[in-house]
Image 1 (cartoon, protein in one colour):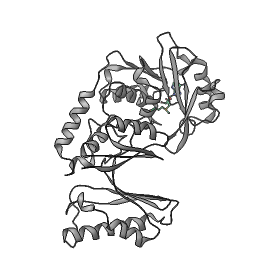
Image 2 (cartoon, protein in one colour):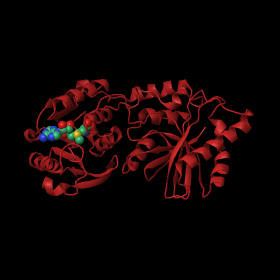
Image 3 (cartoon, helix red, strand yellow):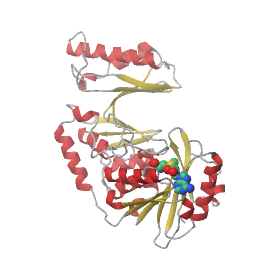
Image 4 (cartoon, helix red, strand yellow):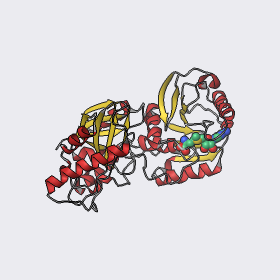
Amino acid sequence: MDLLMCAPCIFGVEGILGNELRRMEAQEVSPQNGRVLFKGGPEILARANIGSRYAERIQVVMGQFNAFSFEELFDKVRALPWERFIGKSDRFPVKGWALESKLHSIPDCQSIIKKAVVERLKERYRIPWFEESGVLYQIQFTILKDEVTMLIDTSGPGLHKRGYRAKAGDAPIKETLAAAIADLARVRNAARVIDPCCGSGTLLIESLLAAMKIAPGIRREFAASAWKLVPSEIWRMERTRAREMERPKPDFMALGNDIDSDSIALTLENAKKAGVGNNITAVVANITDFKIDDDGGVVLCNPPYGERLLDVKAAGDIIRQMGNVFKPHPNWSYYIISPHDDFEELFGRPADKRRKLYNGMLKCQLYMYYR
Ligand SMILES: C[S@@+](CC[C@H](N)C(=O)[O-])C[C@H]1O[C@@H](n2cnc3c(N)ncnc32)[C@H](O)[C@@H]1O
């Protein structure tokens, strides 16, 4: 059975996510602003949940239509085949968002949608009320410029929750963004990867997981783990498939430095939990002590931004220091994510390439130096 699915993602990551879904054999992959639509059966649903490094979650698309009034919203939601997924005793809460649309009151949209789904299920199941004590089918809606997308979430907690980072430092980067940076830096082809401001180690751990093809969701459960539509046999097969794709790389090393000893301890603890503890070393060091050698490597860095960690001037000083110690060298490349518009000036060199990426709500650029 073919399902239309939606994978929301960080702005700027749509193309990378689209390629990843194609590699997973998803069909009709269509990257859009902040999301990728694709088709596939229940095995692709499970595969994308277990294996995607870049999707925030995987949703089933129930329908897409325009709605300019609550009546229209009600009728079009009621016309969708909710009984295909939601059983008589299942839970089906509703949440969502609306932007630049006539229907902009979220609580009103929520209650209209809930009523419409209840009406549909009452007709189909011929029962007057729903106890909602069973499996969770979280209904989600998005309304953008009057276009409604009705979805059911299959993931549960966001897919960035890999399970290895119970504790994080002060300003951790999201795992999905870290994975995208590792992809853009092509760490999979590198001999080693280094983060001189590693915090809780996210960039290094995501690099190791990607280089060794370890599926990020291999050790967690998903909302659809309990769905009838995706039998446990499919989950079992997809987990086995993911494990068979793993490629241990005993020689591939990640090196972390941070000025803060608690961060170093956290990096080592998180790496161990992620199953990549044997491929990482981390020691306390100031970025001013960073040395380049002929062995080379890929440097990934998410330095303090100023807003959250240090004041803006101190953050600028760190960028200047990076410019001094990250010297051009044929065996080294540097990928630094920063919201500072004057980054290149502070760093002392124009980037070979830049890429706009969002770190939470903060517009950043990934400054890439590889020549
Ligand atoms: C934005 S955080 C990095 C977060 C990290 N990417 C993560 O996912 O947890 C910046 C890190 O830079 C470290 N730092 C600040 N000044 C430093 C310096 N002079 N040398 C090395 N590390 C420094 C901080 O301790 C902090 O952990």
